[in-house]
Image 1 (cartoon, rainbow, N blue to C red):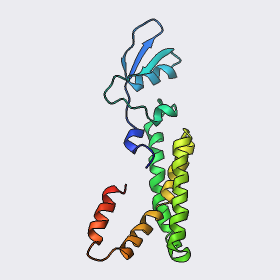
Image 2 (image 1 turned 180 degrees about the vertical axis):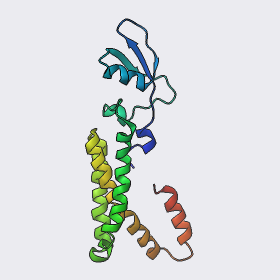
Image 3 (image 1 turned 45 degrees about the horizontal axis):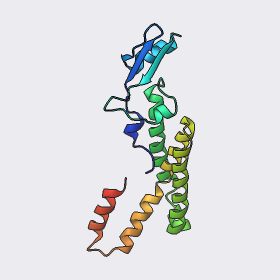
Length: 168
Protein backbone atom coordinates (compact mmCIF):
# COMPACT_ATOMS: atom_id res chain seq x y z
CA UNK A 1 0.00 0.00 0.00
CA UNK A 2 1.03 3.58 -0.52
CA UNK A 3 -0.07 4.74 2.93
CA UNK A 4 1.26 4.31 6.45
CA UNK A 5 0.23 1.31 8.45
CA UNK A 6 -2.43 2.13 10.98
CA UNK A 7 0.04 2.09 13.88
CA UNK A 8 1.90 5.02 12.39
CA UNK A 9 -1.34 6.96 12.09
CA UNK A 10 -1.83 6.91 15.85
CA UNK A 11 1.82 6.80 17.03
CA UNK A 12 2.14 8.98 20.13
CA UNK A 13 4.59 11.83 19.74
CA UNK A 14 6.46 13.66 22.47
CA UNK A 15 6.58 17.43 22.69
CA UNK A 16 8.80 20.19 23.94
CA UNK A 17 6.90 23.10 25.52
CA UNK A 18 7.69 26.51 26.92
CA UNK A 19 5.51 29.24 28.26
CA UNK A 20 5.84 32.90 27.40
CA UNK A 21 8.10 33.56 30.41
CA UNK A 22 10.73 30.96 29.50
CA UNK A 23 13.28 30.67 26.73
CA UNK A 24 14.01 26.98 27.21
CA UNK A 25 11.87 24.11 25.99
CA UNK A 26 11.09 21.31 28.45
CA UNK A 27 9.59 17.93 27.77
CA UNK A 28 5.79 17.80 27.96
CA UNK A 29 3.06 15.47 26.81
CA UNK A 30 0.20 16.15 24.43
CA UNK A 31 -2.28 16.46 27.29
CA UNK A 32 -0.36 19.30 28.92
CA UNK A 33 -0.06 21.17 25.65
CA UNK A 34 -3.72 20.71 24.67
CA UNK A 35 -5.05 21.60 28.13
CA UNK A 36 -3.04 24.81 28.11
CA UNK A 37 -4.32 25.73 24.64
CA UNK A 38 -7.94 24.97 25.61
CA UNK A 39 -7.57 27.16 28.71
CA UNK A 40 -6.48 30.04 26.47
CA UNK A 41 -2.93 29.99 27.82
CA UNK A 42 -0.27 30.94 25.32
CA UNK A 43 2.12 28.03 25.08
CA UNK A 44 4.84 27.50 22.53
CA UNK A 45 5.41 23.87 21.60
CA UNK A 46 7.38 21.84 19.08
CA UNK A 47 7.57 18.16 18.27
CA UNK A 48 10.50 16.46 19.96
CA UNK A 49 12.34 15.34 16.83
CA UNK A 50 15.19 13.94 18.97
CA UNK A 51 12.84 11.28 20.38
CA UNK A 52 13.73 7.86 18.91
CA UNK A 53 10.00 7.22 18.27
CA UNK A 54 9.51 10.49 16.37
CA UNK A 55 7.73 10.11 13.07
CA UNK A 56 6.20 12.84 10.97
CA UNK A 57 2.79 11.27 10.58
CA UNK A 58 -0.73 12.06 9.43
CA UNK A 59 -1.74 13.45 12.82
CA UNK A 60 0.80 16.22 12.28
CA UNK A 61 -0.07 16.68 8.64
CA UNK A 62 -3.78 17.07 9.38
CA UNK A 63 -3.25 19.21 12.51
CA UNK A 64 -4.88 16.68 14.81
CA UNK A 65 -2.59 17.03 17.83
CA UNK A 66 -5.46 17.67 20.27
CA UNK A 67 -8.02 15.45 18.53
CA UNK A 68 -9.33 12.58 20.69
CA UNK A 69 -7.85 9.20 19.74
CA UNK A 70 -11.34 7.78 19.18
CA UNK A 71 -11.91 10.32 16.40
CA UNK A 72 -8.61 9.36 14.78
CA UNK A 73 -9.34 5.64 15.08
CA UNK A 74 -12.59 6.08 13.14
CA UNK A 75 -10.43 6.41 10.02
CA UNK A 76 -9.29 2.81 10.54
CA UNK A 77 -12.70 1.55 11.63
CA UNK A 78 -14.45 2.84 8.53
CA UNK A 79 -12.20 0.73 6.28
CA UNK A 80 -13.18 -2.48 8.05
CA UNK A 81 -16.86 -1.57 8.23
CA UNK A 82 -16.90 -1.03 4.46
CA UNK A 83 -14.81 -4.17 3.97
CA UNK A 84 -17.47 -6.22 5.76
CA UNK A 85 -20.41 -4.52 4.07
CA UNK A 86 -18.86 -4.93 0.63
CA UNK A 87 -18.70 -8.68 1.11
CA UNK A 88 -22.45 -8.78 1.73
CA UNK A 89 -23.40 -6.33 -1.03
CA UNK A 90 -21.01 -6.93 -3.92
CA UNK A 91 -20.45 -10.70 -3.78
CA UNK A 92 -22.49 -11.51 -6.93
CA UNK A 93 -20.62 -9.04 -9.18
CA UNK A 94 -17.87 -11.46 -10.34
CA UNK A 95 -20.50 -13.98 -11.42
CA UNK A 96 -22.74 -11.38 -13.07
CA UNK A 97 -20.14 -9.15 -14.75
CA UNK A 98 -17.11 -11.42 -14.92
CA UNK A 99 -13.83 -11.59 -13.07
CA UNK A 100 -11.94 -9.35 -15.46
CA UNK A 101 -14.48 -6.55 -15.05
CA UNK A 102 -14.47 -6.99 -11.27
CA UNK A 103 -10.67 -6.90 -11.03
CA UNK A 104 -10.40 -3.87 -13.32
CA UNK A 105 -13.20 -1.83 -11.74
CA UNK A 106 -12.43 -2.58 -8.11
CA UNK A 107 -8.69 -2.30 -8.73
CA UNK A 108 -9.26 1.11 -10.34
CA UNK A 109 -11.42 2.25 -7.42
CA UNK A 110 -8.73 1.02 -5.04
CA UNK A 111 -6.13 3.15 -6.83
CA UNK A 112 -8.43 6.16 -6.56
CA UNK A 113 -8.74 5.50 -2.83
CA UNK A 114 -4.94 5.33 -2.55
CA UNK A 115 -4.58 8.63 -4.41
CA UNK A 116 -7.08 10.29 -2.07
CA UNK A 117 -5.00 9.15 0.92
CA UNK A 118 -1.78 10.45 -0.55
CA UNK A 119 -2.96 13.71 -2.12
CA UNK A 120 -5.56 15.13 0.30
CA UNK A 121 -4.29 15.65 3.87
CA UNK A 122 -7.78 16.08 5.26
CA UNK A 123 -9.56 13.93 7.87
CA UNK A 124 -12.81 13.51 5.90
CA UNK A 125 -11.04 12.93 2.58
CA UNK A 126 -8.84 10.24 4.12
CA UNK A 127 -11.83 8.64 5.81
CA UNK A 128 -13.54 8.49 2.39
CA UNK A 129 -10.34 7.04 0.88
CA UNK A 130 -10.20 4.28 3.49
CA UNK A 131 -13.91 3.58 2.97
CA UNK A 132 -13.31 3.24 -0.77
CA UNK A 133 -10.36 0.92 -0.19
CA UNK A 134 -12.42 -1.20 2.19
CA UNK A 135 -15.24 -1.37 -0.34
CA UNK A 136 -12.84 -2.73 -2.98
CA UNK A 137 -12.07 -5.98 -1.17
CA UNK A 138 -13.45 -8.07 -4.06
CA UNK A 139 -10.27 -7.44 -6.03
CA UNK A 140 -8.46 -9.60 -3.47
CA UNK A 141 -10.84 -12.56 -3.48
CA UNK A 142 -11.14 -12.60 -7.27
CA UNK A 143 -7.37 -12.81 -7.73
CA UNK A 144 -7.24 -15.79 -5.34
CA UNK A 145 -10.00 -17.50 -7.33
CA UNK A 146 -8.06 -16.93 -10.54
CA UNK A 147 -4.95 -18.24 -8.88
CA UNK A 148 -6.67 -21.50 -7.96
CA UNK A 149 -7.85 -21.93 -11.56
CA UNK A 150 -4.51 -21.11 -13.20
CA UNK A 151 -2.04 -23.01 -11.00
CA UNK A 152 -1.76 -26.79 -11.11
CA UNK A 153 -2.85 -28.71 -8.02
CA UNK A 154 0.69 -29.62 -6.89
CA UNK A 155 1.80 -25.98 -6.70
CA UNK A 156 -1.31 -24.31 -5.23
CA UNK A 157 -0.20 -24.38 -1.60
CA UNK A 158 3.27 -23.00 -2.42
CA UNK A 159 1.93 -20.23 -4.64
CA UNK A 160 -0.75 -19.28 -2.12
CA UNK A 161 1.85 -19.19 0.68
CA UNK A 162 4.00 -16.79 -1.33
CA UNK A 163 0.99 -14.64 -2.22
CA UNK A 164 -0.15 -14.51 1.42
CA UNK A 165 3.34 -13.55 2.55
CA UNK A 166 3.29 -10.43 0.37
CA UNK A 167 -0.42 -9.58 0.31
CA UNK A 168 -1.33 -7.20 3.11
